[in-house]
Length: 267
Image (cartoon, rainbow, N blue to C red; front, top):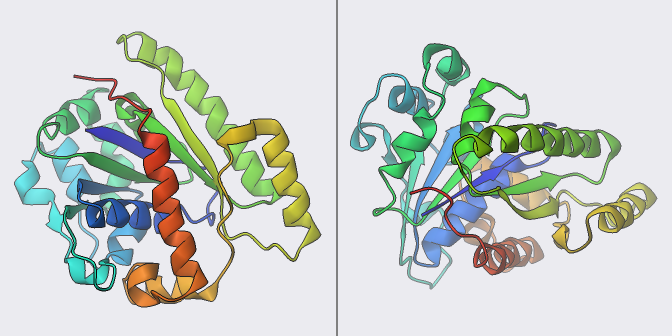
Protein backbone atom coordinates (compact mmCIF):
# COMPACT_ATOMS: atom_id res chain seq x y z
CA UNK A 1 0.00 0.00 0.00
CA UNK A 2 1.19 3.49 -0.86
CA UNK A 3 -0.24 6.68 0.60
CA UNK A 4 -0.06 9.62 -1.81
CA UNK A 5 -1.04 13.12 -0.67
CA UNK A 6 -1.95 16.06 -2.89
CA UNK A 7 -0.72 19.35 -1.48
CA UNK A 8 -0.56 23.02 -2.27
CA UNK A 9 -1.10 25.71 0.34
CA UNK A 10 -3.14 27.71 -2.15
CA UNK A 11 -6.74 27.01 -2.98
CA UNK A 12 -8.17 26.80 -6.47
CA UNK A 13 -5.34 24.83 -8.04
CA UNK A 14 -7.45 21.72 -8.71
CA UNK A 15 -6.28 19.38 -5.93
CA UNK A 16 -9.73 17.88 -5.50
CA UNK A 17 -10.30 17.29 -9.20
CA UNK A 18 -6.87 15.70 -9.59
CA UNK A 19 -7.38 13.58 -6.45
CA UNK A 20 -10.65 12.23 -7.84
CA UNK A 21 -9.17 11.42 -11.23
CA UNK A 22 -6.01 9.78 -9.90
CA UNK A 23 -8.02 7.63 -7.47
CA UNK A 24 -10.65 6.73 -10.06
CA UNK A 25 -8.09 6.05 -12.77
CA UNK A 26 -6.21 3.69 -10.48
CA UNK A 27 -9.44 1.79 -9.83
CA UNK A 28 -10.10 1.52 -13.56
CA UNK A 29 -6.56 0.16 -13.96
CA UNK A 30 -7.25 -2.62 -11.47
CA UNK A 31 -6.12 -1.26 -8.11
CA UNK A 32 -7.98 -1.15 -4.80
CA UNK A 33 -8.13 2.51 -3.83
CA UNK A 34 -9.31 4.64 -0.92
CA UNK A 35 -9.76 8.36 -1.59
CA UNK A 36 -9.53 10.37 1.62
CA UNK A 37 -11.22 13.76 1.91
CA UNK A 38 -9.06 15.56 4.49
CA UNK A 39 -10.56 18.98 3.83
CA UNK A 40 -13.31 20.27 6.11
CA UNK A 41 -15.02 21.81 3.07
CA UNK A 42 -15.84 18.30 1.90
CA UNK A 43 -15.21 19.09 -1.77
CA UNK A 44 -13.94 15.64 -2.72
CA UNK A 45 -16.92 14.06 -0.97
CA UNK A 46 -19.35 16.17 -2.98
CA UNK A 47 -17.40 15.76 -6.22
CA UNK A 48 -17.91 12.01 -5.92
CA UNK A 49 -21.63 12.53 -5.41
CA UNK A 50 -21.89 11.92 -1.66
CA UNK A 51 -23.27 14.05 1.14
CA UNK A 52 -20.71 15.41 3.57
CA UNK A 53 -20.13 13.17 6.60
CA UNK A 54 -17.60 12.94 9.46
CA UNK A 55 -15.89 9.84 8.03
CA UNK A 56 -12.31 10.90 8.70
CA UNK A 57 -13.25 12.34 12.10
CA UNK A 58 -15.06 9.15 13.07
CA UNK A 59 -12.08 7.07 12.01
CA UNK A 60 -9.39 9.07 13.83
CA UNK A 61 -11.17 10.53 16.86
CA UNK A 62 -14.03 8.11 17.53
CA UNK A 63 -11.96 5.11 16.42
CA UNK A 64 -14.77 3.72 14.28
CA UNK A 65 -13.96 0.71 12.09
CA UNK A 66 -13.29 1.26 8.40
CA UNK A 67 -16.39 -0.71 7.42
CA UNK A 68 -18.53 1.97 9.10
CA UNK A 69 -16.90 5.01 7.51
CA UNK A 70 -15.93 4.02 3.96
CA UNK A 71 -18.32 4.65 1.08
CA UNK A 72 -18.26 2.45 -2.03
CA UNK A 73 -18.01 4.55 -5.20
CA UNK A 74 -20.15 3.22 -8.04
CA UNK A 75 -17.96 2.55 -11.10
CA UNK A 76 -20.66 4.05 -13.30
CA UNK A 77 -19.42 7.54 -12.44
CA UNK A 78 -15.76 6.94 -13.27
CA UNK A 79 -15.45 4.00 -15.67
CA UNK A 80 -13.87 4.44 -19.07
CA UNK A 81 -16.44 3.65 -21.80
CA UNK A 82 -16.16 0.09 -23.07
CA UNK A 83 -13.44 -0.67 -20.53
CA UNK A 84 -14.10 -2.96 -17.58
CA UNK A 85 -13.28 -1.55 -14.15
CA UNK A 86 -10.95 -4.12 -12.64
CA UNK A 87 -10.37 -2.47 -9.26
CA UNK A 88 -12.45 -0.82 -6.56
CA UNK A 89 -12.77 2.72 -5.28
CA UNK A 90 -13.89 3.79 -1.81
CA UNK A 91 -14.30 7.25 -0.32
CA UNK A 92 -13.58 8.33 3.24
CA UNK A 93 -15.84 11.40 3.44
CA UNK A 94 -15.37 14.67 5.26
CA UNK A 95 -17.38 17.49 6.77
CA UNK A 96 -16.78 20.47 9.05
CA UNK A 97 -15.75 18.20 11.92
CA UNK A 98 -12.54 17.39 10.05
CA UNK A 99 -11.08 20.74 11.11
CA UNK A 100 -11.15 19.68 14.79
CA UNK A 101 -9.49 16.27 14.38
CA UNK A 102 -6.07 17.49 15.52
CA UNK A 103 -7.40 19.19 18.64
CA UNK A 104 -9.52 16.18 19.64
CA UNK A 105 -6.91 13.51 19.00
CA UNK A 106 -3.76 13.52 21.11
CA UNK A 107 -2.08 10.73 19.15
CA UNK A 108 0.16 12.22 16.46
CA UNK A 109 0.47 8.79 14.88
CA UNK A 110 -3.27 8.10 14.78
CA UNK A 111 -3.46 8.67 11.02
CA UNK A 112 -0.53 6.30 10.48
CA UNK A 113 -1.87 3.63 12.82
CA UNK A 114 -5.34 3.56 11.31
CA UNK A 115 -4.28 3.39 7.69
CA UNK A 116 -1.71 0.68 8.34
CA UNK A 117 -4.77 -1.48 9.03
CA UNK A 118 -5.48 -1.37 5.29
CA UNK A 119 -2.04 -2.43 4.10
CA UNK A 120 -3.16 -5.91 2.99
CA UNK A 121 -6.53 -4.78 1.64
CA UNK A 122 -5.73 -1.64 -0.35
CA UNK A 123 -3.14 -0.73 -2.98
CA UNK A 124 -3.37 3.07 -2.82
CA UNK A 125 -4.65 5.74 -0.47
CA UNK A 126 -5.07 9.13 -2.17
CA UNK A 127 -5.40 12.06 0.25
CA UNK A 128 -6.95 15.38 -0.76
CA UNK A 129 -5.90 18.14 1.65
CA UNK A 130 -7.09 21.63 2.52
CA UNK A 131 -4.98 24.60 1.41
CA UNK A 132 -4.65 25.82 5.00
CA UNK A 133 -1.79 24.17 6.93
CA UNK A 134 -2.81 22.65 10.23
CA UNK A 135 -1.87 20.07 12.83
CA UNK A 136 -3.86 17.58 10.77
CA UNK A 137 -1.42 18.21 7.92
CA UNK A 138 1.35 17.15 10.28
CA UNK A 139 -0.38 13.84 10.97
CA UNK A 140 -0.90 13.30 7.25
CA UNK A 141 2.78 14.03 6.54
CA UNK A 142 3.73 11.24 8.94
CA UNK A 143 1.63 8.74 7.00
CA UNK A 144 2.53 9.90 3.50
CA UNK A 145 4.82 7.96 1.17
CA UNK A 146 4.77 10.46 -1.72
CA UNK A 147 3.40 13.92 -2.52
CA UNK A 148 1.97 15.29 -5.75
CA UNK A 149 1.84 19.09 -5.97
CA UNK A 150 -0.81 20.54 -8.31
CA UNK A 151 -0.29 24.22 -9.08
CA UNK A 152 -1.43 26.96 -11.38
CA UNK A 153 1.30 28.78 -13.28
CA UNK A 154 0.61 31.92 -11.29
CA UNK A 155 2.43 33.85 -8.58
CA UNK A 156 0.16 33.04 -5.62
CA UNK A 157 0.03 29.36 -6.53
CA UNK A 158 3.83 29.32 -6.65
CA UNK A 159 3.89 30.90 -3.19
CA UNK A 160 1.61 28.14 -1.96
CA UNK A 161 3.92 25.60 -3.56
CA UNK A 162 6.97 27.11 -1.85
CA UNK A 163 5.18 27.12 1.51
CA UNK A 164 4.24 23.48 0.98
CA UNK A 165 7.87 22.53 0.38
CA UNK A 166 8.94 24.47 3.47
CA UNK A 167 6.42 22.75 5.76
CA UNK A 168 7.24 19.41 4.22
CA UNK A 169 10.91 19.90 5.21
CA UNK A 170 9.88 20.78 8.76
CA UNK A 171 7.79 17.63 8.99
CA UNK A 172 10.59 15.49 7.53
CA UNK A 173 12.59 16.23 10.68
CA UNK A 174 9.65 15.05 12.76
CA UNK A 175 9.36 11.87 10.68
CA UNK A 176 13.00 11.18 11.44
CA UNK A 177 12.13 10.74 15.11
CA UNK A 178 10.11 7.68 14.12
CA UNK A 179 12.72 6.40 11.66
CA UNK A 180 10.38 6.95 8.73
CA UNK A 181 12.05 7.28 5.33
CA UNK A 182 11.87 10.67 3.55
CA UNK A 183 8.71 11.43 1.62
CA UNK A 184 9.12 10.96 -2.13
CA UNK A 185 8.52 13.90 -4.46
CA UNK A 186 6.17 12.38 -6.99
CA UNK A 187 5.99 15.55 -9.05
CA UNK A 188 4.65 19.03 -9.64
CA UNK A 189 1.56 19.19 -11.86
CA UNK A 190 0.89 22.49 -13.67
CA UNK A 191 -2.90 22.59 -13.80
CA UNK A 192 -5.60 24.78 -15.35
CA UNK A 193 -2.89 25.87 -17.75
CA UNK A 194 -3.55 28.64 -20.30
CA UNK A 195 -1.05 28.23 -23.12
CA UNK A 196 -2.24 31.43 -24.79
CA UNK A 197 -1.07 33.67 -21.95
CA UNK A 198 2.48 34.92 -21.67
CA UNK A 199 2.26 34.73 -17.86
CA UNK A 200 1.55 31.01 -17.85
CA UNK A 201 4.15 30.20 -20.50
CA UNK A 202 6.86 32.17 -18.72
CA UNK A 203 5.94 30.77 -15.31
CA UNK A 204 5.98 27.22 -16.65
CA UNK A 205 9.51 27.75 -17.90
CA UNK A 206 10.46 29.20 -14.52
CA UNK A 207 8.98 26.14 -12.82
CA UNK A 208 10.96 23.80 -15.08
CA UNK A 209 14.19 25.73 -14.46
CA UNK A 210 13.68 25.45 -10.70
CA UNK A 211 12.47 21.84 -10.46
CA UNK A 212 13.54 20.13 -13.68
CA UNK A 213 12.08 16.67 -14.30
CA UNK A 214 9.79 16.96 -11.29
CA UNK A 215 7.50 19.13 -13.43
CA UNK A 216 4.85 17.10 -15.26
CA UNK A 217 3.20 18.03 -18.53
CA UNK A 218 0.58 20.72 -17.90
CA UNK A 219 -3.15 20.05 -17.96
CA UNK A 220 -4.81 22.75 -20.08
CA UNK A 221 -7.78 24.71 -18.82
CA UNK A 222 -11.09 23.41 -20.13
CA UNK A 223 -14.69 23.98 -19.11
CA UNK A 224 -15.28 20.24 -19.57
CA UNK A 225 -13.45 19.62 -16.29
CA UNK A 226 -15.91 21.77 -14.36
CA UNK A 227 -18.87 20.29 -16.25
CA UNK A 228 -17.82 16.76 -15.37
CA UNK A 229 -17.34 17.70 -11.71
CA UNK A 230 -20.82 19.20 -11.59
CA UNK A 231 -22.34 15.87 -12.64
CA UNK A 232 -20.00 13.87 -10.38
CA UNK A 233 -18.16 12.04 -13.15
CA UNK A 234 -14.60 11.67 -14.35
CA UNK A 235 -13.58 13.55 -17.44
CA UNK A 236 -13.15 10.36 -19.49
CA UNK A 237 -16.56 9.10 -18.39
CA UNK A 238 -18.28 12.40 -19.18
CA UNK A 239 -16.57 13.28 -22.46
CA UNK A 240 -14.46 10.33 -23.53
CA UNK A 241 -13.65 11.73 -26.97
CA UNK A 242 -12.41 15.12 -25.76
CA UNK A 243 -8.84 16.33 -25.55
CA UNK A 244 -9.48 16.97 -21.84
CA UNK A 245 -10.24 13.27 -21.36
CA UNK A 246 -6.97 12.41 -23.08
CA UNK A 247 -5.10 14.74 -20.74
CA UNK A 248 -6.85 13.14 -17.77
CA UNK A 249 -5.83 9.65 -18.83
CA UNK A 250 -2.26 10.81 -19.54
CA UNK A 251 -2.20 12.10 -15.96
CA UNK A 252 -2.88 8.57 -14.73
CA UNK A 253 -0.13 7.14 -16.94
CA UNK A 254 2.35 9.69 -15.57
CA UNK A 255 1.29 8.86 -12.03
CA UNK A 256 1.83 5.14 -12.59
CA UNK A 257 5.23 5.80 -14.11
CA UNK A 258 6.35 7.83 -11.11
CA UNK A 259 4.84 5.66 -8.39
CA UNK A 260 6.80 2.61 -9.55
CA UNK A 261 9.84 4.09 -7.81
CA UNK A 262 8.05 4.83 -4.53
CA UNK A 263 8.19 2.17 -1.84
CA UNK A 264 5.97 2.16 1.26
CA UNK A 265 7.91 3.70 4.16
CA UNK A 266 5.98 2.18 7.06
CA UNK A 267 5.13 -1.33 8.14
